Length: 139
Length: 80
Image (tube, rainbow over all chains, first blue to last red; front, side, top):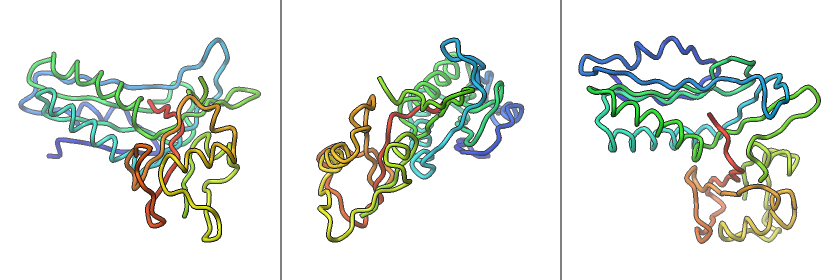
């Protein structure tokens, strides 16, 4: 079985992740699912659009998974991000890990999502009723 | 030399890439590239940060550029 799952996909099925991280050596699985929120700073979001530099994004995601596996004793790791247009409530990112004891997978899970947000070349555009905004582009 | 653009960088330039032809002044390093595009397109100067990737890896300012490299402008990322 593959210990690392690193993917960029069009649609995320968040219900797959338990089976993907399940492992006979693991006593715990920790998963973070990022979803589309309806409001940003009080304004109603119609949808989000995600764009990526796929070749580099997959490399950076792989580095993060490797680093996590070095820092903590993990059995399996997943980093899966979606691209394209996403409606409110849709899952856009799934990260998670399984480990013998829960501390490792809890800590690794936060590391996976926090580092992804800092380094992986994926860009999010918020579409409001009357404007669009590239998130984090300006100070 | 071809430079790939993503996210807001595409909007600033109005295209998905910048071409430096043989006759143009071609940037020789990451810092030269950043300086040249910021002069031509002032929108880059207003971003929270500006990174460059060479052959799909983040590259520091002193990294030299070759016309066969795959070069990309990486505006502030916002995945997750």
